[in-house]
Structure formats: structure tokens, C-alpha cells
Amino acid sequence: MNYLRNAEELVNNVYLTSDLTKFKQITGNRPHNPQHVKRLTSSIKRYGVLQNPIIVNEHMVVVDGQHRLLAAIEAASEIYYIIVPNYGLDEVQVLNLNQKNWTRRDFLHGYAQMGIPSYVKLVDFMKENNDFAISTCIALCSNASSMSIADAARTIYNEENPTTKKVFEEGTWVGKDFKLAQENADKLKMIKNFYSGYNRGTFASAMLGLFKNNEFNFFDFLNKLKIQPNRLEDCTSVSQYKLLIEDIYNYKRRGKVNLRY
Image 1 (cartoon, one colour):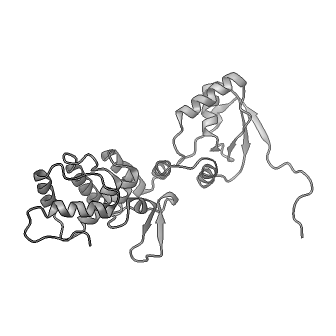
Image 2 (spheres, helix red, strand yellow; image 1 turned 180 degrees about the vertical axis):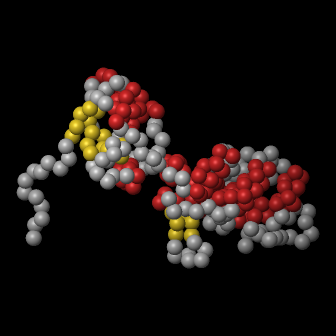
């Protein structure tokens, strides 16, 4: 049976208004891009009202088109809009994923603004440790060990049920011991005087694994770096870093320690 409509049908009316104060920003949306707003503002001033309507829900909350609205306000212009009832943040994220992918920082900002505890704590952690990339901060706050920084940031596995995964972008990520995360971040920063790549994701991943190795004493390693201040260098993989670190760690050591396994 063919369920396709055979005739055109009016679904949503398009409205035009100059009262831009009626619209509200949605809580949890990613921050706007000032350059994009600037470009749209210039376009409005040159060509007139933007023809692409913004989408709002029944409460006049902007679901799609925050940049267009900000540009219209800046240019003192009118704006077209469509009302779609029951739209919310989920639809915002779907729209953005289909148009221009959200970055991990966008999701972090959105979920933190919504008050999800782990994301709020991560924002604070990143302010304190802004020399590390967001993926490294997520791995640190996840108390990751052998998995790569990228994997730790993308998917956090439930230790009690390995088949269950919590994905950062879905708002289900739960940080673990944030105090331990800060202690490990501070240790990585102590290496800065000996190695400019102390904040590289691959190096941090290697060190996170070693922090959980009972055969590894960080402060012993730090002392070995003081003796060999130029030994650390960029490596292409975690395994290469561990081999180099093991070599540094065993310098003038009678009983050699295997740190790779």
C-alpha cells in the first residue's frame, strides 16, 4: 500500500517578526561562534532579512538558528521563524550533528550547563589544567590506565559489565576519582622541566598506565630524569614511550624493572 501523500500539505506556518525579545536561548546549547554571527550580520545589512527561518518550540525557545537570531539582533532586523512544538536539546544536537558536527567541547559545555555533575566537575578540572587537551582531561578524570587517550575519551566501559559503555557525547559519562585525577595531572606537570611534550596525549596515556603499575615509583623516575634531563623525546606510540621510560627508569639500577607488561 502506498502511504505517500498525493498532494501538497501545509505543515508549519512561517512567521515574520521584528520583536526579537520574545525568543529565548535553550539551556545546554553550545556557545555561539562570534565570527559566524559577524558574517551573518554583514549579510543582513547588505542583502536584508535572512530568508532561512529559525526554528523555535511553543515556548519560543530557539532550537535551530541561534546565530541567525543573534545576527538579526545585531543588525536590528526582522526574522522569519517556524514553531515546532515539543522540540528541545535532543533535537538541537541532532540538527547540529546533521549540519555541522558538535565538538567534544560543545557537548561538555552543553551538559555542564544542564548541571550534570561529572561534566560540571570536568569543566572545573580543565580550567585548572588548561595545558592538557580535553581528551587527556577526560582520560585523567576517568582514571584510565592502559586504554589510549582517544578510547578513554570516546567510550568509558563499566568495569562491572564490560558490554555496557557510557559515551561522553551522549551525556552518560561519569568521572571517577577527581582528586586522583588532579594528583596525576600534577605529576605530569612535574615532568615539564624535562620534557616539553609532557602534555602529549600519547605520553599521558603511557604515564597513566605506569601510575597503576606497582613496579613503578614516580618520584624515583623523576630523580632519574634529573640525572638524564634530555632523555625524554617524542614517540609515536604508547609502547615506544614505555620502552623509553623503562630505559630511563633502569639507569644505573642493579635490579632491572620491566615496565612494559
